[in-house]
Length: 224
Image 1: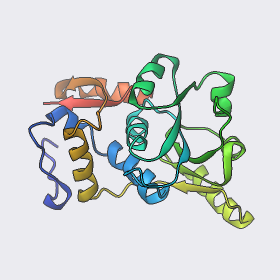
Image 2 (image 1 turned 135 degrees about the vertical axis):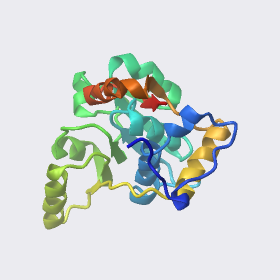
Image 3 (image 1 turned 90 degrees about the horizontal axis):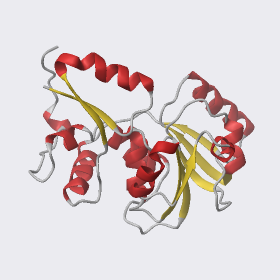
Image 4 (image 1 turned 30 degrees about the horizontal axis):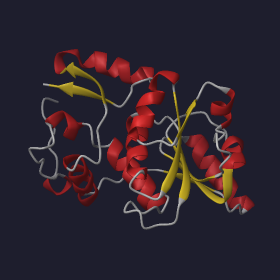
């Protein structure tokens, strides 16, 4: 389609301080991160909640980059995993500890400071529940931002076992007020959309190929 029509109720004004590319990079990833932290993990983004230890996997990706930055608004100690080439970027976003996901500690999700995690925002793939469970506090939560059939099976199995550790699948439900919250953070300089690359619409297939590779640092944009 040449045009897609959005419902007015799901849009918010873009202030001049926020560029069009920055605004385009916010949904759905920013909304997914916001919903994961506030609605599913129960964290407060105003710093008034208790201190929590949080792990973000694939922290240099679309959802992960926003999760790290939003967690800086909460009372959180942030451990993050990413590829070696993105470790400095993830630190610049606010992560306190960064793991190369290809190292033994990265594979095991071990915090360099030995912390157990109250919350894990899982933005990667193919990590077994046993790895999460070994690193969680007794009532820790894992929010799976890329749930598949295996996640749903795991959720059902855990309910049968009555475990206090939780695996929660995310199904993003975009809300106008949350998008407005994110736009205002960008305007205030408290949130920085990371843009991996920009592609003209005539070369949209290149953007798609880049996305399928799964190694983008931030968001991939298609421009008119």
